[in-house]
Image 1 (tube, rainbow, N blue to C red):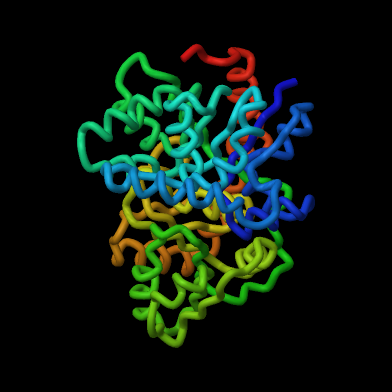
Image 2: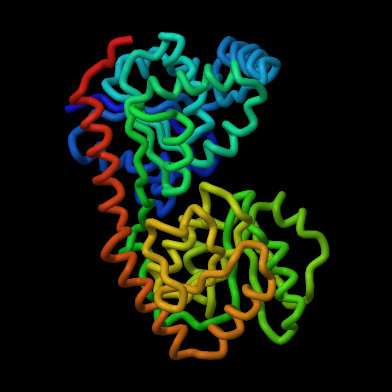
Length: 372
């Protein structure tokens, strides 16, 4: 069985998930448990407690500064430098986010990372569009062509990357995300305490749009769950809008269960449609109103009025109308929720997602080290 090295973005919630084998937050590990359960030897870049050593941090600052001066885009070189020796003993390195993926792909280009590299892109086009000259763009394109496989959670992002990398390049796959349909399931015994809830830490979440809609309906109760920084950015709120910050996923699940409708307004982009919360809410048979971003417009089986309500990003009137119609028609809302649950169970389970990741990683391991 292969030795697989997972490269994670270093964050408190991810370290907490690594320390809690039974936590709902284990989804933040992108299938590490399931791949280990298949017999693979698994290592990762967060095994060392605390910050990376001083030499790695200094090296990271130097490299990131040089990349910025050249017009490029860097990342968490510190944790990558600190664990490069371990990574090079693996059969496959799995970069789970761009924060560590970009450093790894550049080190691969430089010949310092030897194993096959599987790269999960999450918002990569937005980063690559910031490259400031053609020389740097060619450098990054050549580097990304050294990956074994790239996969994305949005069909639109995969299409963009295929066009950017050019024909006859490496495989760029669309892999829909998944949700644990047992952990997130309908709970009819929960009392409904709020009319509309919105959850998210992604910077593309359009809470301002939801607040504008809430101000039109003082008789309805709205709840926003966000990070502390994002909550502060909202400023003064209408009296009918409550905000909670930095909840555990268990608390988020309880709040979702107590809401009549889940609203997920998102700014237009290629990589996110509030996908994780969307699938969690659908698995709980909640009626969801979500922005039709490119990330979820295709590939997730969403149908307006069938298993969710889809509205155009930034359209306050459309969001308002969809929320009011869903709240005022209990039978239609229940039907939306039931079909949403059915869609997730049949197409977007966590087992399906992790099996697909395993097939990508094991195929890369089978191919062996790519000649440079």
